[in-house]
Amino acid sequence: MSIFIDAIKSLKPDAEWTITGSDAYANITWYDEVQTKPTESELTTEVTRLQTIYDGQDYARKRKVKYDLLNQDEMRYDDIKNSTTTWVDAIDAIKAEFPKP
Image (cartoon, rainbow, N blue to C red):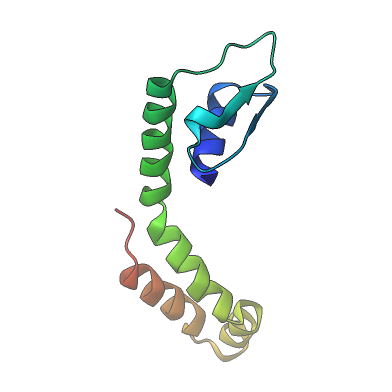
């Protein structure tokens, strides 16, 4: 349902509306007097577009999880101090594991 809400917000920014129940489109109550309620077709198209964008960023979400596990500041400091490439090697390994499409 969240992506459905995002689709409405994307199509009709600042519109006034609510959703109740589980059948999202059927349960939109439209309060906005300036913007018209999006059609079911418009919402379906926007949901598909947003899902495609979200799916295309899967590699970035997976990379972030791995990046967050690294103590990057310490690694960079140690690399400078010891003339090593531990940090760069770790980042390269993560990028190789989750390549950008």
